[in-house]
Amino acid sequence: MAALAAACGAAACGDDESAPSVRTEPFEQTRLREPGESGTVQETVCKRVPARAVARAIRMPGTRLEAKPNDSLDLSVCDWRAKGVRVQMILDSAPRAELRYFNQLSEQLEFYNADPKRRPYQIKGVGDDAAYGGAGAWWTRAKGQLVAYSTKRILRVRVVGIPAKRRAAVRLGKLGFRRLSAPAP
Image: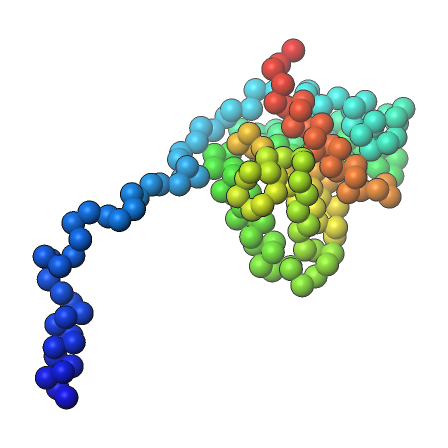
């Protein structure tokens, strides 16, 4: 019995000559690990997405929304407010946005999948639907928030004070990516 175990142990360890010298499949790093460049946002959200366009997107044309910017190196935030209504758009252009988008979606699913109000519901047609995770955007009811990914950027849209929050957030996400991806005027 001991001899059999010793023979199996020796065969399992093998020697260098029995190991293949060439990989069966080439090893390739994922593109998500490539380093990025900080400070790529040239125009801020408040400058590129006018309050009038936001009011139309939330189906409240003529509403005078006051915009307040809050920007940093890789983050541009615009907060539009009117009586009883608040819309916030956050553009995150820090490096490795697609990987961070996927990780955020995974964490949301891991912790809140059983809670219908906090579970992320994937939405196609807003961001890059070829992104890791299955769709280019997701919606969380409890937060009234859309998170979308496209062109190495994450866009968060929060809508408060209107009945059709999800539809408005989807329209705003499309508007945001369209305005923020267009060449500067």
